[in-house]
Amino acid sequence: MRDNLGFIASLRNRYGPLVEITLQPGTRTLIVQDPDLIRSMLTDLAPGLDKGRFFEKMGQLLGDSVVTAAGQEHVRKRRQLQPAFGRSEIARYVDIMRGETITAVDSWVPDRELDVREAMVKLSLDMLAKTVFGGSLDEATFRRLRADLSVVMNGVGARVMLPDWVEKLPLPFNRRFTAARDAVRATIDQAVTELQESGRDSGDMLSLLLRATDEETGRPLTGHQISSEILTLAVAGTETIASVLSWALYEIARDGEIREQVLDELDSVLGESPLSSEDLSRLPFLDRVIRETLRLHHTGWLVTRRTVTETRLGEWTVPAGTELAYCQHALHRDPAFFPDPLTFDPDRWLDDTQAAAFAPAYLPFGAGKHKCIGDRFALTELVTAVATIVRRVRFDVPQDMAVRPVARATVRPGTLLMTVRQRGGSAERRQG
Image (cartoon, rainbow, N blue to C red):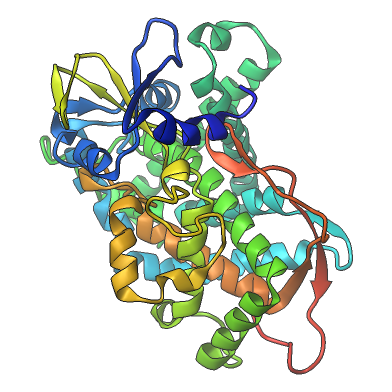
């Protein structure tokens, strides 16, 4: 409880690649720490595993979705949703993401401290909501939905980690969560009905989801199914994106050389033009900054699976009903796989041979059939937001400030206050 991340990180050196701990009374949990075993768990053994408590609780709270489903159910749902996350569709979202980022930056007060993580939570939720619903909802409905999603997102993390009986207590916290979740579902159901009746294509992700069909029945997804997918996407994606954005801006702000390299690359590639989807693949240094942020500051705390039958994992036989978990945050900081692991060094990815050597232990979006369906969407958000922010403002970091990672439902930065400065001088003026 005092240092959960430090505890998990210490297990490999003290006990080896597979360690049993107690997280929930009466449940056996094995922490898997060897990259080969982790990849075996995520790929070879995946068809015979459930997703475990963390995802099971999310399914209970938000409804069945591609994130919470396992086995053939996951495969079926993934095929339904894949078109919404295709490369061509995500390219269309860049203008929306950039616009929301500019709106956020313009709301920050120059020469004042900004709670960067809270600002990034707001931005990531705005980007997601506008991408999913931008063409389907009027402004008042959109603002109400955005507020309800925020309540749901903040409430799920606590419920996943706390015992089941807590959510049954008649507390204001529980009532707010239930009311917000039901309101989101009602709003989505109404939007689905109106789009179906109008027959129009609103150009957002909701329209794409409406065109998805169940491969078993050939029928379109119901409003309830769509709202379950969107709720889970909001919870799974917003918090993680916000944390990675916060860490990336922090690392850029505290290292002047990295900051200048990012800006020089943006100047060279973009000139005075705004970032477009075609530019995303032409920013190799910014790509390495994002890649290194996902390594050093990964948000994965405990990713779970559960054995359905007796299962062989490496040299061990694991009984049915055993929780298997791995910690991406600890794996990405293991000195056995990453030299000088606590140093933020984008150039560690510069050499393709070295990057290939890191690959077995680098799992920013998981692996196998359950690899994050939104990985390309997330990377697009990250590059678009960081590029737009650093061209418009710079952050000052107090020299004595030490930002610690904190593990809740995900790993996020603790208090992260930085001062917003206007970009000044002709050499520094860059468009968003």
